[in-house]
Amino acid sequence: MASKVKTLLVLAAPSIKSKYYSEKFADIIEFMTNFAKFADGKDDLIILADTDTLPSFQGKIDPNKLIEAQIDDIWIRDFSPAIPARQIKFKYAPSYIKRSDSTHVENSFLRWCSKHAIHFSEKSDIILDAGNIVDNPSGTRVIITDRVLQDNPSLTKASAKEKLRQILGVNEIAIIKQLPGDTTGHADGMVMWATDDRILFASETEPLNSEIINELKASFPNVEIIETPNYFVDETWKNFTTARNVYVNSIVTDHYIYMPTFNSKHDDEMLKQFQSYTDKSVVAVPAENVCMMGGSIRCLTWQVKDSIRMKILPPPTS
Image (cartoon, rainbow, N blue to C red; front, side):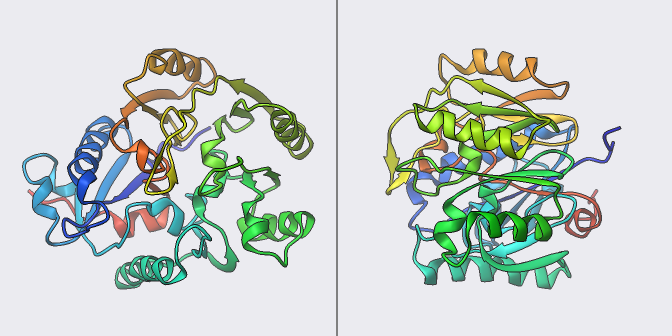
């Protein structure tokens, strides 16, 4: 039976002083505010924001959902730990951004964790964004793209599977081919788990489509693989591939799936389709004003369960 304990969803707001996000600042704040409202009463959600940025949420959100923190990027999924109940931290050093920038971002997160006595169950020197780790709800199976081999040249596919299986504490792992031309090469722009044993895969052109399905079938013999329509839009923002119409970039918790919507004619169709494949409640969360930056709901969220969850949640204020 699924746990009745809520998952904690953690977002990191951009600094109001950030030049990089200045043109999208208002849109990001609005997205986070709306997401908090959609998650209310379902799962717990908090937003980390620096001192100068906190006033941007004033009057828009319950103060109990805000924590002062200096986190230097919004894509918290990638530099936070993977597997909600275990919290396993990999090295954040992706090839698509400068090493000095990734180190700066990762250190800001690690400083905050240290300040709050948040410890990870395991740390690894393998370079791997957590956005490239798509885990099923119970944390027994994961899907990763072969970007992990590109970022860690000493690993073969076989050795990567074995090492990651041990580090992540999972039973089965698939390493699928990344999408050609995708900036980050993350699996969470390609697949998601609707249940512990059902994968939703945004179909691709051949031969890539068959290659991905074959790897999933070989890695997960007892899992159902369902192909869903792919309505991807070809656009970029500051050299990052868009996540517009990438519906599989959803957050899956014990009882809910938070699915991004894009003010698209396909939104209702995909919401109904996702709901038909799960007994979880599918919650639509508008992401049309942030998705062009290269990520969506899942990319912007760190998922936490169990003991670390209670270390992060602030005590309620009157």
